[in-house]
Length: 193
Image 1 (tube, helix red, strand yellow):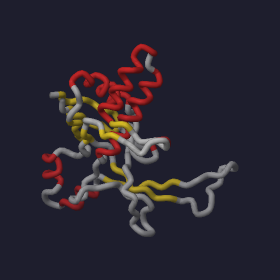
Image 2 (cartoon, one colour):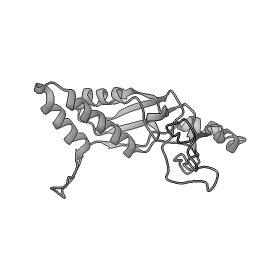
Image 3 (cartoon, rainbow, N blue to C red):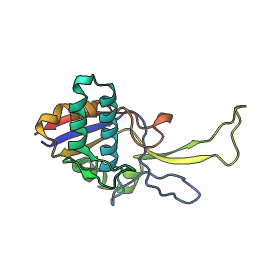
């Protein structure tokens, strides 16, 4: 089955690119070739796997085996220190992106100005036990304003659809600095065919 889902961001968010803009910004948002923000498919896969593992941990003994089967089938078997063998899961996770229609609208006249309006810069600093800012701890982060992105999960076995939907509903934050209020979101299934 293919699942189309929506990420509804409720706060500013960032999926870091690992890049900086020199002295201006310490952490940049990941962007596609046209400059639009997106959430990488591997990030979605990791969050949903983490959700599945948490739901497994809290499942009743009688349903743990079905969660274990779901995790291995959909996400694969991660290698550990005792084994070099890892297996891929059957599900493929696309990047979550703006709709093509919205990208075209934003790319029209004054495109760069419109695209720049999707981002802002926030500042943070480390505070010591006396409430004073630590020296050289000021950081600047490029974040994306709240918006809606859409992605797909392809190849989900039909009998495992309800578990995948549970995992999607379980995710409440994503991206960098989740523990500092960024990336609050809702993942909503729009279509499952």
